[in-house]
Amino acid sequence: MITTHPFDDDHLKEECGIVGIYGVDEAATRTVLGLHALQHRGQEAAGIVSHDGQEFYAHRAMGHVADNFSHHDVVGPLKGHAAIGHVRYSTTGETALRNVQPFFAELAFGGIAVGHNGNLTNAAAIRRELVKRGSIFQASSDTEVIPHLMATHLRGNVIDRLINALHQVEGAYSLVVLAKDMVIGVRDPLGVRPLVLGKLGDGYILASETCALDIVSAEYIRDVEAGEMVILDENGVTSMRPFSPARQRFCVFEYIYFARPDSIIEGTSVYDARKAIGAELAKEAAVEADVVIPVPDSGVPAALGYSEGSGIPFEYGIIRNHYVGRTFIEPTDQIRHLGVKLKHNANRAKVAGKKIILVDDSIVRGTTSKKIVEMMRQAGATEVHMRISSPPTSYSCFYGIDTPERSKLLAAQMSVEEMAKFIGADSLAFISLDGLYRAMGHEGRDSKAPQYCDACFTGDYPTELTDQSTEKVAQLSLLAEKSA
Image (cartoon, rainbow, N blue to C red; front, top):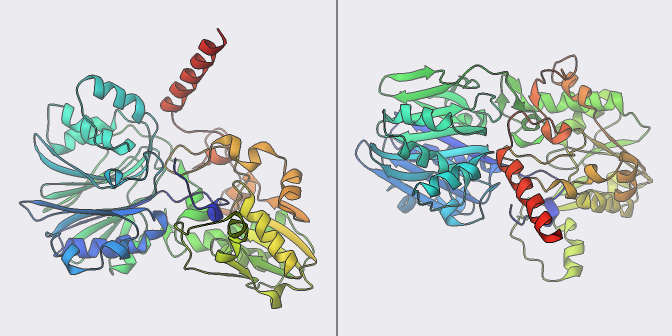
């Protein structure tokens, strides 16, 4: 894990975003635009690898897409009709240029580049075995085990080797893979992370979300299905099913927070889903108040839904400064304490003298929620009621979302009443698990076969957590040695 901006710690962190384009002139230029649209999914680093039928070209850099891919002298050399791109927020591996994707390697059958959204839960175990067999790793990211597994499989073409590698990994992944004269897209058998397919001129595009298709005027075709592999090449689109069928467990937090509200995922408008969640929350956790106020920007659609569901007026009672990022330097404790006002400020005219309902998508550590509640009281709110459009986040995610360890999650340590007291709210309520599923169009959560991955709320992890189990055994062994 990495150290993150302290003013963002009441939100789970974005994972990564991927784009793959085949059969389009200046594919890298369009990949840049797609990555711009997916910037919300990863703000630490960006990279692109392209191919012109003969050679591979690459550029990777720390920082935002606009800071690194806005000049022709950078994008121009990324020649070719095929390219893949990646925006990164690290969940495994430290923040360093060597971990910026797409990863590229020259293997026995030719060059290959890999971009990955998700997290492999047995990568450390695989890495140890590969190192024993002589593999040399350049990065500390879990993704690097994929090209190594492909390199050590001595039979078949690039597709055969990729399938063999993916049969050995566990966890969550949506991948874009660039090889000579093809781009491959694939989702894990449970479909935890998103991937969509579109038509772009005479070629095709793969991306994490439909908003990346919109920015390049691509036509949305469909979502790549869970467990599906699609090959984009001179023959068009070829679909394969290399895995045994499994019940889909798409990450429900994509609807709650991660995806852009203008995206459509698995046939559902993210914006409409968030409004429906807010309306359901209004049914479950009604309270008398004068105004509904979103915590911007992620709380806006849910707050609109809460307002419509409750009949209480919606107002922008908090104004967000969009020009504060995670790299802001905090020189003193006093400035650090005031830091929340760098990002949010009260709209006093809409707050003073009113009973307010604050709507946000989640509470992780609780520190920012506490400061925002305090800000509302200082602006003259007579009552502050907090409503959260997700169930309590009580467990860490191991599928590509940067979450604190469980001991640092507020909901894992306190009851809802204790949390309300901690953040200073007059009341606090979260949408129920069944309420969340109702808002998503289901009768409720099917405990025997859950419709989504909701492990951060329930601890019901849909795959083996090999690396976590190994680490726990190692920790217990160490404690036993120390006590002996």
